Amino acid sequence: MSQFDNVSVLKQANVYFDGKCISHTVVFGNGEKKTVGVILPAKLTFNTGAPEIMEVVAGACWVKLAGTDETKQYVAGESFHVPGNSSFEIEVQGEPFHYVCHFA
Image (tube, rainbow, N blue to C red; front, top):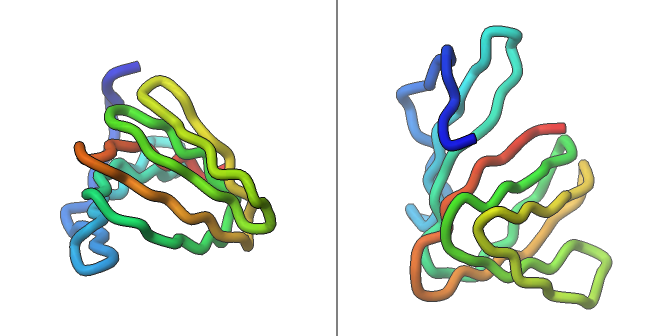
């Protein structure tokens, strides 16, 4: 799916890590929320409250989930799951990384 229909978008951006990650919250008619954003080249650590599914829309990233030693690359069309109350390191090189964060 290349677009979300019949949604509301919060005007205020979510800005993290001095602007290296910027997203907007999308609210669906049933109250479900997702964020749509971009991460510029950087190596960042995110903490999660709820479980997340990170969908890669464009670009590539390297991800290391908390408690693992493996770093895995993800590209457009792929996704990765992050447990709730956890964290992950993400590294973006070169081109910006475009994503949709689905809260599980």
